[in-house]
Image (cartoon, rainbow, N blue to C red; front, top):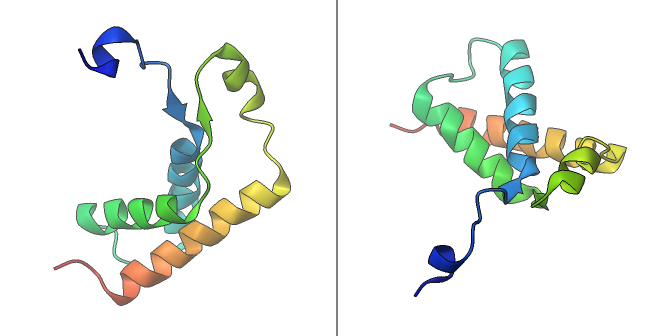
Length: 95
């Protein structure tokens, strides 16, 4: 019997995903026409940025309460990762 069959992992969530998505949306709204905004490019940007930031998993209500209280350092890390992702994918958009 597998671990997922024995335990409920529905409350396990990587908070960094939502933060990256929010920052990516913000940066794409400010981006010029030279930044690709098609489905494949935006998903690639999100994946690239997520691979650059530390994961922030939470698994319970207490994690949900403290997750919004991010340090400025972590916010800067996310903004920088998204910026790098947008630049990288803009230089090499998917075909």
